[in-house]
Length: 158
Image 1: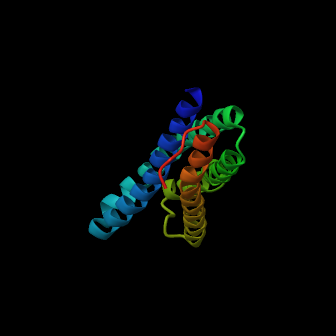
Image 2 (image 1 turned 135 degrees about the horizontal axis):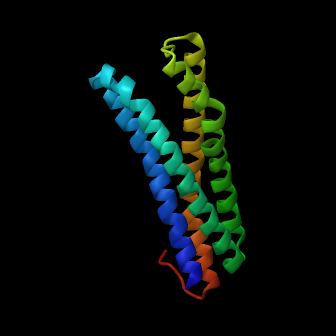
Image 3 (image 1 turned 30 degrees about the vertical axis):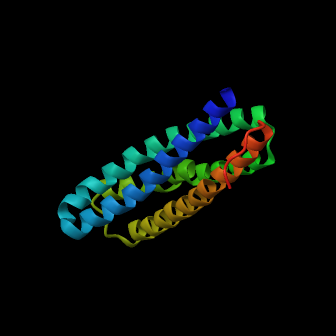
């Protein structure tokens, strides 16, 4: 039972995290296309709020994966854990290494400066990499659950 709860926590945290990244990309892109002035004010706030949110989700996903791994003793769950841990690195390091500097430049009115543009480009690479790793982790979820179900004596169709 606890193993199922841990697996469920991982699934929910992953879905909210991955979905949040997709939503953030979609909403910010659309906002800039529709109303650049509003976007210049709103987008930084959206990213700052999401950075805190994704850290909570990363923590929940990792805690769930650790509990699931301890209870299931599954190599597949271990692989999933390492994928989630890999996605957690940019989620944790991006704000520390990039966002703070970008916010300082933005506060000084230097959001059109070459330094800001360079940091923005690096930030986009970090977000895209995180998204790709999370996509891979999501594709791993059914694989991990299938082995877990087999070890429980239950089987999934197919």
